[in-house]
Length: 336
Image (tube, rainbow, N blue to C red; front, top):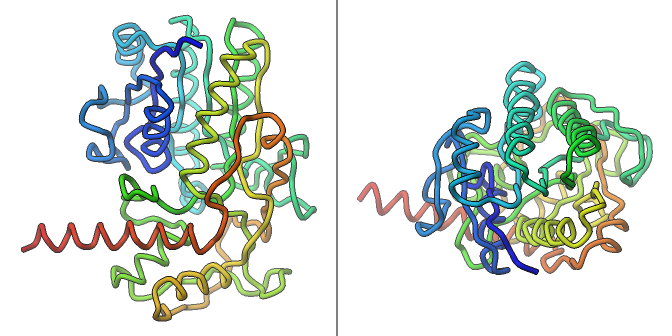
């Protein structure tokens, strides 16, 4: 298969930067567009064409699509913090739904044939079953999940009216860092549990706040399905290749390992990796959090040429902690 250039929106962010690495290793040519609101320029390799700007900037996107001879899009750009989406819903509908509409429209005008979208397990809301699958009801309980689901709907309807196919990858909880230390989570003020915990482990935070200890779960804390970011990046490459191989098909796939861990189990893993316990502060429930969210991942395993390589929580936490320590060392050197 001839591999055209791929435009990665949000390619300077956490997941997008790992996707750039995975694409290049698989032989794809890559360009990145990112407004750097949460991403950093350092996350993008220096030899990758980089365009600073917003995906809602029609003129910019049209110029990049044409000038870089783009044949496919991986769309990561957007806002991702669930509690913030409850407090600032219009920001999420603007950054996620409206901006995605602009990007999809530019792709249709440019004749792009393949779009791969970064969706979320939040589209399922608070399911009443242990493991959710792709055909289960999508009833988001927060604006973040709804903003992503609306983009899935736009892609579904637009692909029925225009000659392109799409994939929507519904992530569960993404964590970890590139095992070779090339990329990781850089954004300040993260609310992701493992990022928060490893920041506490290196002294950047004084504790980890556990939101909700009275859920109907074995230890009272929320249960989530954690997936290593490098496995997720590899899934994107496999999904993109599938879109090219089967242009008549669209994809909607869960991205997870099919098993859950509680907040306290994850913190125990961080303590093991760190060698010293981190302080835990128990608080009340956080708005928009479902008690359990675990994937049924049968479809992705059967559909894609993809097999996860980093499934253990100790690997995920260990890579995240190694990355955080490297960031801490860079900060210390900069201060000196």
